[in-house]
Length: 152
Image (cartoon, rainbow, N blue to C red):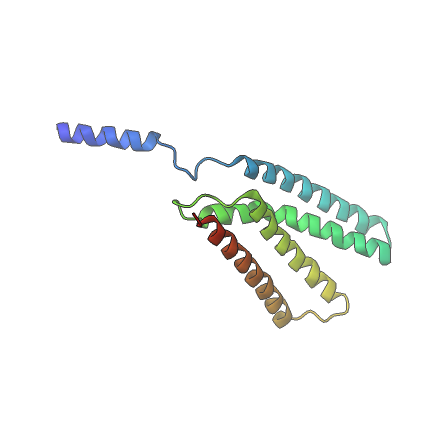
C-alpha cells in the first residue's frame, strides 16, 4: 500500500511539472496577433477591391499584394500548429520568424499559381514542381539554421 501511495505522489508531481511545449513563446503570441490582422485586412481588402474596381493593371497588382497578405495571415496559425506538433519535445520550438517565413512561402506559392492562371499556363505538374522548389528552399534554410544552433 505504501508503494502505491508513493506512485500516486510521483504521478501528481509529474502532472504539475509543465512540459516545455505547453508554454507559448512570446514571439508566437505576437505572430498569431499579426496573422489575425493580416488575414482580416487582406480578405476585407480583397473583397473591397474585387467588388469596386475594374481588373486593370493597378488593381491587378494590388490584388496580388492583398492575396499574399490574406493567404499568409490565414495559413500562419496552421503552420505554427504543424511546427509545434512535429517539433521533438527535447528541441525548442522554432522562432516566430521561421513560422512567418514558411507562411510567406505558402502565400508566394498561391500568388504565383494565381499569376500563372491568368494566361492559362498553370497545370498540375507546374504547381507540383513549384511547390517542390519552395519546399526544398525551406528545407535548405532550416537545416542551415539548425546546424548553426547546434554549434558550441
